[in-house]
Image (cartoon, rainbow, N blue to C red; front, side):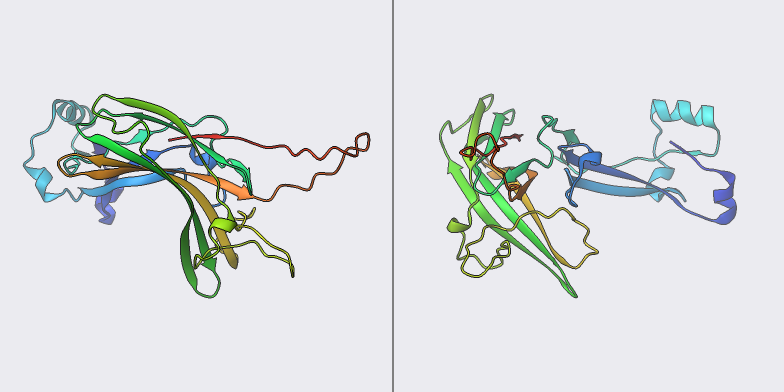
Length: 266
């Protein structure tokens, strides 16, 4: 129910209401480098004023009747029609370290997967993919996307209705496994030196000229059933170069490097 102010009538303006169903896997204030921890699944909007013709003869719900009686004639009801089998708006609660986790080149990425099959389909197998996306922001714009690591497994599958599976998978994106791919973004290199996959920069502002690089882990489940199908989930992460480590003066042989490990929950 929306209460319309008299000035809306006088100025002849319109009022509409929108509904968004989204898959959220992080708080909005944690968005970094232009990455959004949200995937929009369904969006629709309706006009409340002037009323949608389909609303005129529609019977009010009990709650709408009570609100109409309390708020007066300037209260206008509205309805949304969701398509059959549309997804619900859900939130995946991340662990404190999941959002925008920093990884160094050459490190393995550990993907902690928990599957609970509440559907009438069978999960046949799982595929985990690391995607590199490069947005070219020059005088013209272009986007390249490459798979830089992939793992496919049927261990523990098929997973029938009511079944659960918890498993940690490991993938490691390396340039040595992707040298022949077109559109792959690489770090700049000096003459006669090798390089690695492009690092995520510190500035994701698309108004700046350059190349904006993003990485995501994508988990894809293959389903079997009347119509088959797939179920996917994604999480972004940061891949970059480690800071140079200076030897400790008291121990010149100390060459150990710190390593960070994150379990990405899907």
